[in-house]
Image (tube, rainbow, N blue to C red):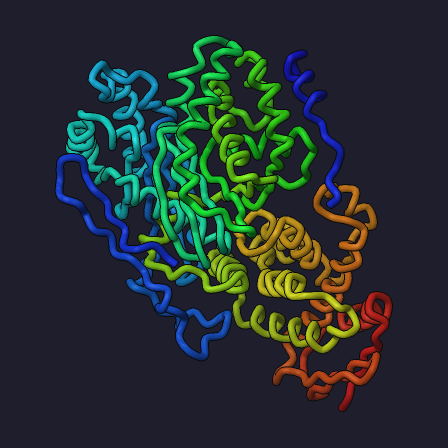
Length: 562
């Protein structure tokens, strides 16, 4: 680590914490008639009587296709290609991702159009994307361009060139549609209330307000990180006068957000590569134990300190800060100035990071999925999509899921856990055997790893980690006593007790999961009585072990009735 980077670390280390849908989306091509994109309705819910594992009863606005599809997002700074797969319900997941930095707004031509160099970089990027698509046999493609191409006088010629050369159906999003797709992506992964979503790109900032989970209004501002960097920051490191001019300009432009009435429960939710880079950097600096930025909370006071340090550091030093990639190390200061401007203007103490944005919104639209109606549905559907992707035994998962929740509800007055912990147990029960698709020996450990690696939504970082710990217990292994020390800033000692309680319930449910018909459970005081046919198949060793755990962690005795 270089001396400059070590200085950044020392100065930024902080003590540990105490602890819809849019209206129809219009996509317009520069110089062409607008293209209408079909939209979903929230009323297209899962059919009456659906169980959480009932694939066939789900209804969508268009048929599900069991084949890969691709989304290309050509932004003003970066370009991303993502190839997705999907299940009949739940979020799509990426099977390939490529990222390039054509920087279309880095050197604007005299007339405000894309320069010849920018056009060459953009075409070269899309040519590489075309080769990847052909190699993977992908024929379903949604490709969009945003503010750089939208605002350029020669944008239409660029789009036509891309289509002619590379057979990529590139479309230019209107500012309104860009905001709507960003909303759709965030709403598919974070249950929204009265929130402000800010999607910070290279050329523009999309500000989206939601009310009662619905998109209320949006606006686009010319506050992209690359655009601001080019205009204001000429020196390395920036001069004080340059920073002042940047901050004054950001503050002036952000006056437009004042038309969004401030709600007392407003959250500020951030989307975009710059914001994800800030999250990665703060996680590395603070020793955060989870490599997961979705759902991570960036505190305003930490970002203020980061801005003070990075703005007086040379680019060579910024490159050494984990999370701040070499391709963003120059523009990160301008992007951070915009983020802080929003937080100060909205009097926000923190910003919640969303790992899902415009690309996930496009994927959601391609699949025609209704938005989740609750946090529970969000968590269940993403867990079920993971089961589908792995080819796991859904019937066994269904039985263990039902028994786990029955045991949770039966003992609620004893453990006194709430709805968040119940949802944590749901996800763990659905995914407890997913690791068997890798290897049955030690499959509980494999399941816990897969759970931490899949795109699961609806759970906090605490809940996400608790689910993986619960899964690791279901075959009889206790949670190590040093777990809290291994996950600082996420877990507390009390959480270890919660995990063992829920893990005990899952282990008991697993031991009875193959009993047919389903066992009858009843509770009397601190005794649970289980009745089932004496000829039923079940795991006696796991059953006895889980009974001991019930006595230890819940002070409950389990008895078998004939």
